[in-house]
Image (cartoon, rainbow, N blue to C red):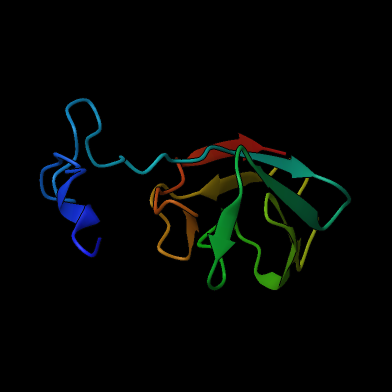
Length: 113
C-alpha cells in the first residue's frame, strides 16, 4: 500500500503559525553586580550567562582601563590603572558589547567601591 500517508492526516496548520499562547519569545535582560576584588581589580557578575564581544563600556571615575578578562559566562574581571576604592563605577544600560544568549541587554548599574 503506497498511499498510507493519505489515511492518517495530521490536521495541522502552517508550521510557521504558532499556536495560541506561544508567541515569540521576548529576550530576557540580565543584571550586573560590581565588586572590588583588590585595589585595582573590579569583578562584574551577571545574573545569567552573557556574550561579551568587546570591552565593556564601564567607567570608574577618573581611572583608565588596563585589561579585561572574561572568566566565565557570568563573570568578567577588569583591571584599572589606579586604586578603585572610593571611586564611582558605572556600567551603562544596553551596552552594545554585552548581551544575553537570547539577545537581551544588561541593565545599567552604579556603585561606589
